[in-house]
Image 1 (tube, rainbow, N blue to C red):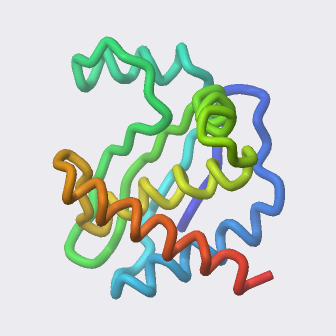
Image 2: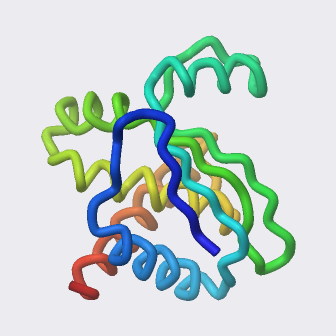
Length: 139
């Protein structure tokens, strides 16, 4: 089951479309959706998590806690909507496009994709772009 929660005033529009899309992405990777929670929050909320659990004193757009077991994807994905807005401006894309990229980035981590090295990051970006295209197919 995929759930969306908000620790700020953000409300995900078209939640049903996002659910269907995320499930399709998971299936396209040969995986199954388990308990996945998306928690939308602000910069300070995510910064505290970054400090407390990862010992990183930086702002970030996403932190994922992966509890995947085999092919059953499970975990929590925290997303700063403030960072999404800033990144969208920086990369000259609209908010929803950047939101899709970050939402699916978390799922791709659960699928086993990494982004620590340049080659891993390149593959991750390729996969993000591939999966974002699936969203449009469903509309």
